[in-house]
Image 1 (cartoon, helix red, strand yellow):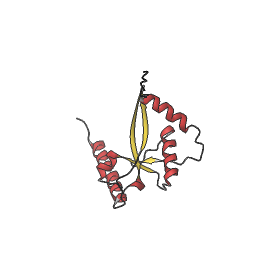
Image 2 (image 1 turned 135 degrees about the horizontal axis):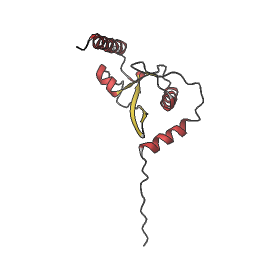
Image 3 (image 1 turned 30 degrees about the vertical axis):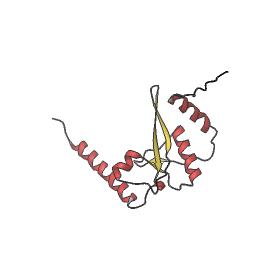
Image 4 (image 1 turned 45 degrees about the vertical axis):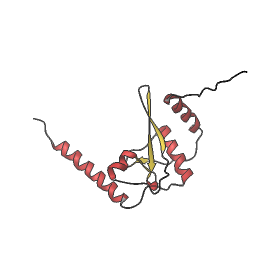
Length: 135
């Protein structure tokens, strides 16, 4: 009797990153600007990934948040089944990933006020830090 053993194919994060670049490289539609909740613009592969998801889900808002952003602002999802977009950062030869969620996936109660409050608090803290003069 012959037995066969199936081995699971494993990928490291660098392989996944390379495959993601290849899979979205043919995406030539008009790409819109997508930003983090803190106002930073996404670029390159991440921009393409967000643009594809936004178009697929018909999101009209191009603002994205991490789980950390949501926790800091005490924001919640509209329902339990929410899927984010895996984005990548590459530093030296290390590729890392993180997940972001579109603002339209969140409960709308006070989202705008919480976002504005968070931004204002960060600006106040930055100004306080800038005012400190080392002796």
